[in-house]
Image (cartoon, rainbow, N blue to C red; front, side, top):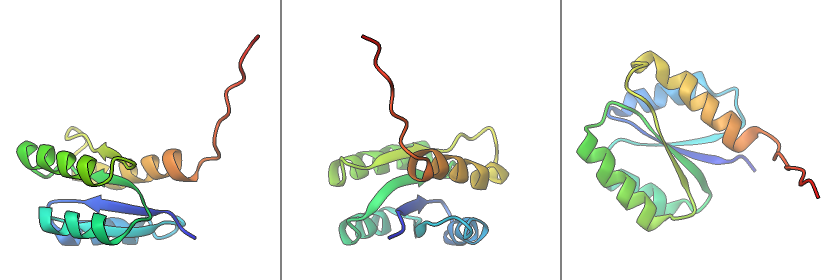
Length: 113
């Protein structure tokens, strides 16, 4: 079963475009662009493994969404894209997060005794 990632962005078509560009990854993509849609996705899909939020949303909205996500799903990591890399940085950011968080084999640390 593929891991589920919730992408949150300012415009619905941006999220769809990211999912299309990254369709080579074994991920089930969900998208949301406003608070009601974020709540609906979190409540209806228990398999969401992480949330990735774009930089286009206003800081107040991003803060509100972080609070909502943390309250509804304290088991889910939230990743915020930087603003400096611009909109062209979204796809590489999402791919890096997914590869490191969901697709890499777990790294076991050896403990010296």
